[in-house]
Image 1: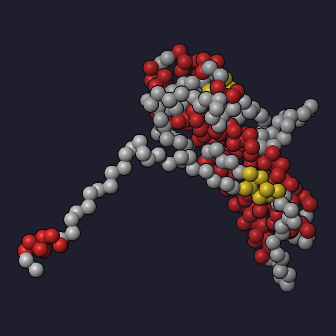
Image 2: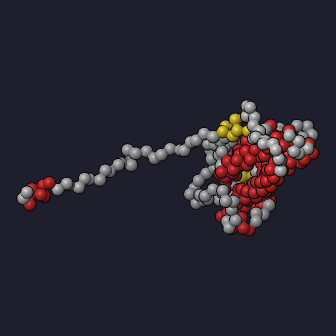
Image 3: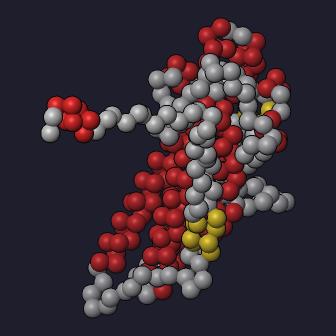
Length: 272
C-alpha cells in the first residue's frame, strides 16, 4: 500500500462528545427506605415517648427527638453556636447511653455463658412492630440504631428471666438503667431556641448575640470558637446567604418564627 493509502487507512480521531449543561439535569435527591423493627414493648414505648398527663411530665421519644435534631442541625449549618452546643451535648448523651448498653449486654452474655447443659436460643417476637424510619439527621439515625440495641438487650433479658437466670429485681434494675440512658439522650435535644444568631454576631458583639446570651447562657469558648464540634455535626454553610428552611421543607412551621423572638423548638419535654 502506498504512503497515500496508509494515511487514508489511519483511523481519524473522534470528536469529543459535548453535552450541553442545559440538556443534562443534575441528579435529584437521594431517597431510601428503612424500617425500625422492635420486638419488645419497652423499646416500642421509648420510640413513641409519653404524652404529658396530670402529675406526669412528657417524655420525649425517638420521633420527637428526630424532629428536634432536624431543627438544631439546620441551625448548626447556619453557624449557630448554640445549635452546635446542643449537638455536642446530644453526642455526649449518646456516648453515655451506648457505653451503658454495652456494659449491660456484656454482663448478660456472661451470665448466659455460665449455663451448662441447656442451649437457650434467641428470643423473638412473633409479630414485631415495624416503624418507618425517616432519619432526618445522622443524630436521629444513630439514636434509632441505639434503640435497636436496647431492644436486643431487653429481648435477651426477657429470655434470661423466663429461664430463671435473673430474678425480677435484677431484671427491673437492668431495664431501668438501660432505659434511663435512652431517655436522657432524647431529652438532651429539648430546650434549644433558634435565636437566629451566628458566631459572627458574637465576634461583632451584636444585640442579637446579647439577647441569645440572656436566654441560653454563655456558650463554651471551645464551642464558640468552633474548635469543639460533634463528630456528626453538619458542614457550616455560613456566608452563603442562606435562610432558615421554609414551611415547605422538612421542618415544622413552629420552628419558623422570626429570629428576634428567639423562639423555642416546637417539642419541649422533661426526661427522667
